[in-house]
Image 1 (cartoon, one colour):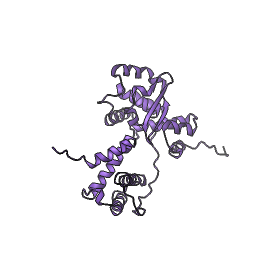
Image 2 (cartoon, rainbow, N blue to C red):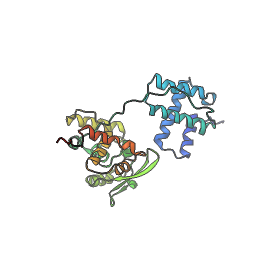
Image 3 (cartoon, rainbow, N blue to C red):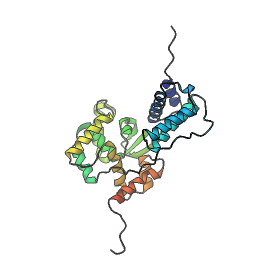
Image 4 (cartoon, rainbow, N blue to C red):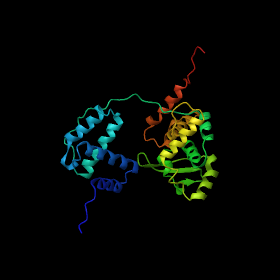
Length: 273
């Protein structure tokens, strides 16, 4: 019996896997390629080219009004599709309508007291996860994929694999979570419980805790990472150290937290005073 050909997107994902793309990047690229195909009424990419790419990217900017970074991500996915999957290249630069620059939004950050209030309203594994998000500055996906081999209790370190940029990094393991983390590992043998470590479950637990704590600002799991960075800077740690702990490729990304500090009042004292 003749075997059915594999789906095109499966082939795309296989190529990215062989080239060691981060799983988050592969998921993003496959999603953009799928959207591109659906936008053009399920035409095969080999039957399309530069004109169709321009139409899709222009649609993102003018109709969906995406941010420039989102439009660039879509373009990168389609560039990979044509260059690396189909072996084609664009003869001329893509001249689509560019997405408009949006005002830079400062991240929502909790004060140290607010973090404490939220954590006191949590319990069980969600509490342990929230303490790791804040104490180590992890992204939610990094936390959910953390494994026993990534934890160095002796050196108080966490090794974070396949973070953004497909680069490993080392961050701090908070003293306060050592005992509860060891107890957790004794129970489950690995830092993973399918019914608890999904982002949606954690998101719900954090939002509920923030509500119970009376926090009147948007709070989600990623807020702990923002707070981690801001509080380190408040404590006097230099921007480069914070950049490495967060795994930011460019220090400009980390600089946003200095703006958060300034939002609460300038550190400069007036000569009049």
